[in-house]
Image 1 (tube, rainbow, N blue to C red):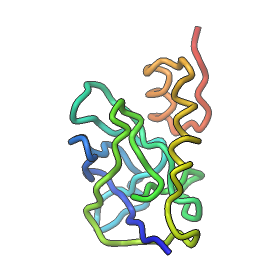
Image 2 (cartoon, one colour; image 1 turned 90 degrees about the horizontal axis):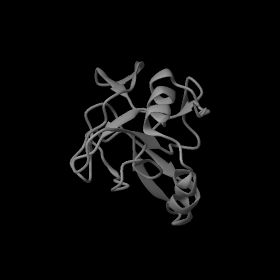
Image 3 (spheres, rainbow, N blue to C red; image 1 turned 90 degrees about the vertical axis):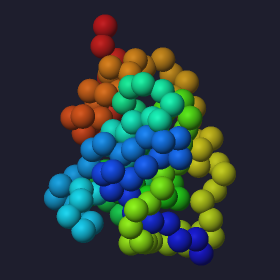
Length: 132
């Protein structure tokens, strides 16, 4: 069994960025909880990116809650997250599988512009539609 930790707005990325958005109706100690699709910054690259992946068993408003085992940034660094709280969950499979990243990142090779991704993330859409 592997232990993961929930993430919230302000938690840092391993590249020096931080989680920028979350859901104020789901808070840990007065700070909005982060979910798959919420926005993050990168410490090495300009722009806004989003959280990819989340806890398979914990959902909020139809989106997976972000956690240290399954979530990563869509920034070029593919950064992981550093939790600031110790509220945790467990992965009963034993560990976060290495296949997780390989199943997530093929979607990033599709040529979808950052503007379309940001619009989808800001509106909470789970489906990204190309414009033009």
